[in-house]
Length: 149
Ligand SMILES: [Zn+2]
Image (tube, rainbow, N blue to C red; front, side, top):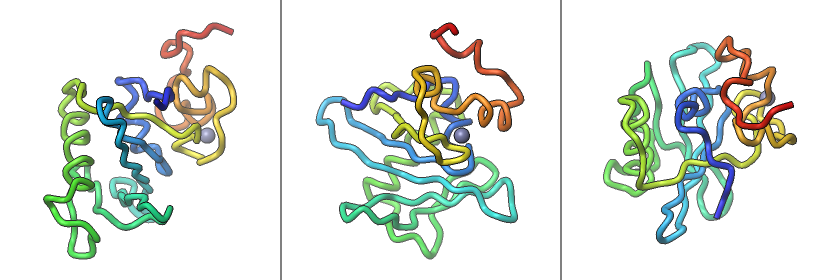
């Protein structure tokens, strides 16, 4: 079981970090789905969501536009696929501040802003580098972590 769980109150900021990867795990079956969410180069409100397939390649899933997730004509997955349903499920709950108990949302020890490795316990707990967290939220992350200096 992956232990790099993204703190509930940071799930949205993590996913919209600009260059994020998330792992959705069913805690009962331990089946998992991996998604990548990349910000558009010319629109800060537009993100491209891809799904990592069994061969390790990312396939285009859909967009998050002004916080709304949808598939588009170029999506490689249908609306009723587990990939689209899985991502929609967690995203709709996150943006409506509903608790997610059905799946575990974790990271792969990479910062969602700069895509470089998270090395310290504190960085892994929060899911960001301190500098990157401050860049996207404006906050120092001391108040979010249980680990003291
Ligand atoms: Zn970083």
